[in-house]
Length: 258
Image (cartoon, rainbow, N blue to C red; front, side, top):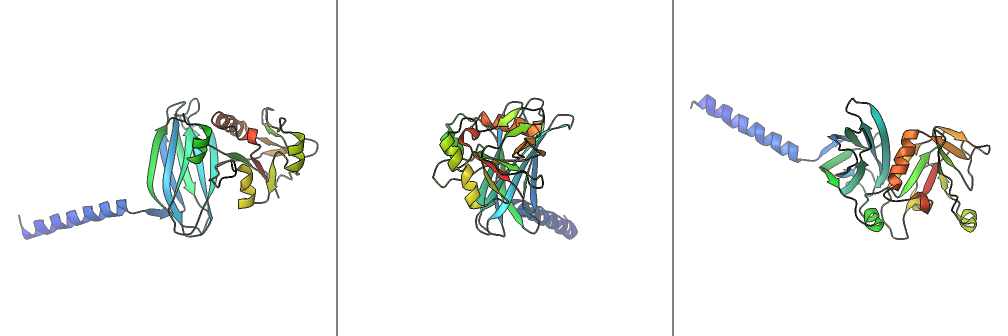
């Protein structure tokens, strides 16, 4: 082999080593996106090890599900804060494949100006045969509902209602004791998510992470303008989530208002 051939071979090996090294290093951007195939009725956990450059940076996990023809079926969102700057933290989201689902795209994102760094992305099928307490501890279920009604003129009330576009009553807190309604109401309100507000959807008194299902209200309803209408897709997502853990029975609901 000539000297030139040896040099080319060494250069090729060096390039391959550099590629392998870069592939093993954490990546960074403002979002991480992964798409994977689904089996109808199955549940999948997508987990990632991430860190940001700001303390308590809000991280949003969005799930978009489509058919085999690319038709949109539904989406859900999970919002979490990352404690401490430059500290690695595991974040996961569970995806349940509805009828006609073919693939899901999961997007982990942070606000503009925040740098997101990730490592160890894993997608696995899970069997949720654990009890509710263990599911909550591992962050595999939604612990509450956040309805973003900002910009709609929603009024605060003791007994707000949530309806689907097709008229189905999704939430009214009708089983809440009168004393509970007067003391705490069946929902909490705030202009933005704060640690104090998030306690509303924290199961029990132990300091465990909350996993809210975040949806967007379409319009205000009821004569008192205290109720909201949500899309049928979001209504189905709520009802599906309740099959695993009934957070509405715990009155774990937050409305974001102006």
